[in-house]
Length: 255
Picture 1 (cartoon, rainbow, N blue to C red):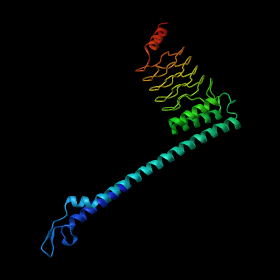
Picture 2 (picture 1 turned 180 degrees about the vertical axis):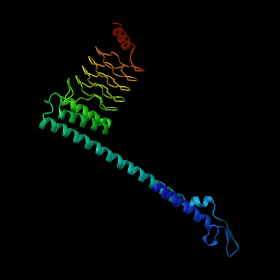
Picture 3 (picture 1 turned 135 degrees about the vertical axis):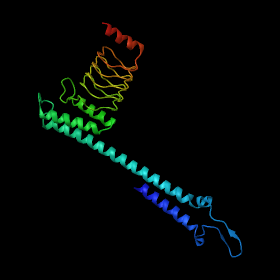
Picture 4 (picture 1 turned 120 degrees about the horizontal axis):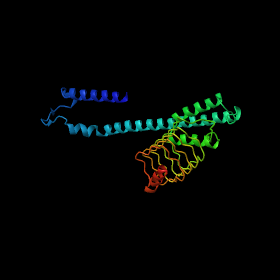
């Protein structure tokens, strides 16, 4: 809207200037002084010299205003994401304390509500806060074997999980594409059917982890520890691996 306003003002100003050349009293067109001297009409360079300072100031003000608004929007967006995270943690904590979420078994409305709330929160959070959600669930022992909250279908794309501790976690059918999982502890984790496309596993420990039928296309496994990791039916299209790692996988497949 402001851009349109400035455009209308500029066009109107140009129209007035052009019309001013038809009226000698404006001083825009050339005219003759009483002493006989002739004053030439104002040229483009005259107008630039006259308008350059206010034009630069106007453009600067416009750009600063846009930058300020973007900054305010980013701050507000960050505040909203933090509020979603805080509310999620408070809600799950309430279910643990008041609704006995941890000890509930079988088909359970409390568990279903917790799962729905978790999946919804993840869709609204950024990578840093997605990692905080996952670490919170793990430390609350809600995603170990036979998890209290099933995370299949959960959106952890682009999560920042560097140095995360998720040993023995059950994370089956989870979307981790684009995440950073460097120097993480995933020993014995159940990662079957999950999507790890374009994930960086630099120095992460995946020993004894189950990666059956998972997707690791374009992932980086070169510096990862893969002792006894189960890669059965895994997709490794364009994944980065050392020759020793590939040879080990081929050897296991041969068996």
